[in-house]
Image 1: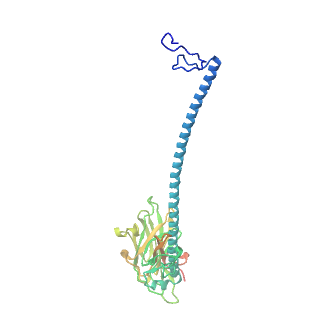
Image 2 (image 1 turned 180 degrees about the vertical axis):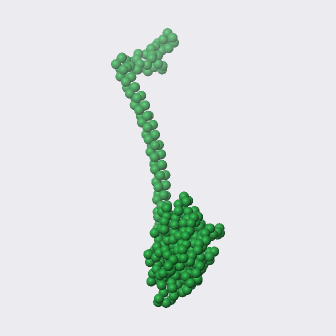
Image 3 (image 1 turned 180 degrees about the horizontal axis):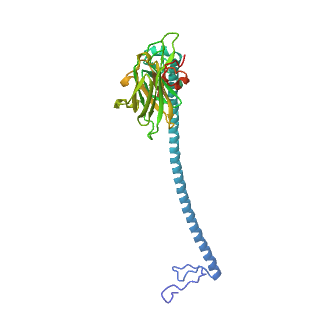
Length: 359
């Protein structure tokens, strides 16, 4: 039967018959209890869905964070390993540099010992350098790095007939030998140059005493004083007192090419030919500071003295590291060749009597 509106009659909700259209609103729940249950189930599903989505987002964020941390850690590990490798190479290079330094020190010690054992023989030798191969210290044929160096590693030898920038402490003395004990002295004057060690104008005083031997080369030879000078200086020589056969001339010019010798140059002249000194000693009497003084002694106008005063050794050593790269070591050592007299003589001041002061 056709309905009044030209549609099929309404079909019962519980009918088992099929209909070609839906002529009634669908019922989701049939009573309040079923509706509440369905609502709670739907709400629970919605909440679970949102929680699931949030968990997925958190997992994604955590994964990104973990990847970032791993990336940064990998970079830090790479740089750390690079630094360790670089430092390891530096340590090896430093070790090999220390080996080169050891070669240089060994060479200087051997040559110094030669000077001490037989000074005259060493000074009479005309050699100007010596290789470390000849000294049996190291050479290129060695397989061990600890004994290997280039064959051109050497020590240059300089024998100076003057004293350049001697580091004089105030409890020490400096001896300048002008003639051998058995020879007649010939030096009539020397130049002494002090450094300007103190910018605060503190006064320092030094005693300079000249000694000579009577009857050189004879058994009855006696040691006497030619004379003495006390020199005071601040930034320049401020005073001097000399007794005996010595006069002093202060304020001498220092050429620019001799600036390394010092700042205050004066000349000691030995007036009496018969009492010209065999040696001169310089010692500090008083210092207002604990700074050391650098002293240079030459002949007149920077000329050489008659005898060799010091020997300078300059070592240039070329060693090898583990990768066969060359490392370089350079050391310099100065050895004074004139033996000092007994310390008591440092304090002898000439009294004008010309009597012997030591035998």
